[in-house]
Amino acid sequence: GPVLFNIFINDLDKGATTEVVNSKLPGLSEEETAKFQTAIKAGNFSEAMSVVKMSDDMFRNTKLNIAITGNSGSGKSSFINAIRSLNDDDRGAAETGVTETTKDPTAYPHPIHPNVIVWDLPGIGTTKYPAKTYLTDVNVYRYDFFIIVAAGRFTEAETKLAKEINSMEKKFYFVRTKVDVDLQLQKAGIISPQVFLVSRWDFHKYDSPQLQETFANDLNIHKRHVLICALPSTSEEILKEKKRALQEQIWKQALKSCALAAVPLPFLSVKCDVDILVENMREYCKSFGLDDDSIESLAKQVRMSADELKCVIKSPLAKAITKEEALKRLREATGEPMMRVKSFISLIPLIGTGIAAKKSYSVTSEVLLRFLDEVAEDAQRVLKKALEGAGNNQ
Image 1: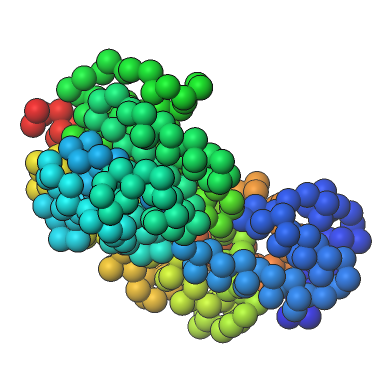
Image 2: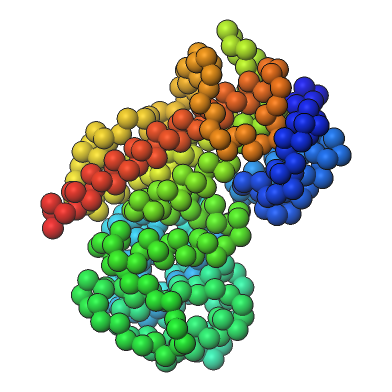
């Protein structure tokens, strides 16, 4: 504690952190940044640490509720499965069919990221859910945003629904499914609507990546992070977004690791919490779909074997990340004369004079950065292989 705090103060004295202390820090909301800066200026290190810890807890506990509505035959259930990286016949998939299978709002938690919950809402204008009271009946305020799904043209009922959602200051998005059958887009009758064209069977094509990026950008920082980590790894743009979102969290993890537990490691001049490393490395794998369930689901979708996809992966999968793996990487990082600590780490007020605490922080950051680079590259290789397989099997 006191050693780390001295580093903060030394940096502040030199004016090295003036810019940081007066600007938003990565991975913190504006309110959290303000609290963090106040604590640093007041010389209260434990308060600054508690802001970081609370922010981290918020990321881990934030729930995101996405409402999907559309009439029977619109491809709504398939869309729900696709956005959860599932095939229509996987365990836990939404039931698909041409008849209206949704009688009441049904929750479908993401299989790997259960804090992301996709809700299948009944179609508007059924006997039980008349258009007049639809939003009240389905509990409009429960959801963070709405996706209105149609296979063909948007009906008057859906247009009215969009206007109602808008009047309640909730975000909505129009999604046209089955565009591989019919790419002709009809006017939906709402002024300059943002309509995204998607195909269940080519979820990486058309407007799917833009759709996912757009609704991520419309959320607050915590919900955005939760959503980006859960999105299907089906495009290079989304893989880049995932990497950026996880990078923003690294300084907080390193700070927690070297300040909270400070367990000295044998033969190393660094102190850190290996559990924090393991937890984050596993999270990276799951966010990039590098776990057995995600790979099996993707393999099935592109009609390949899981082993064909796994053969391009160089880093360990989620379940293979143990304390031993983390310790091995710590030793590798400390063995280098100078760590490759990337430029964004210098943004953090903690990096100042020598001292073991600085090295602990740098080494933990280094291990997480390097592992994140590895899994991001692996995810790119898996995506490339899967797209080749999808092309060959058509």
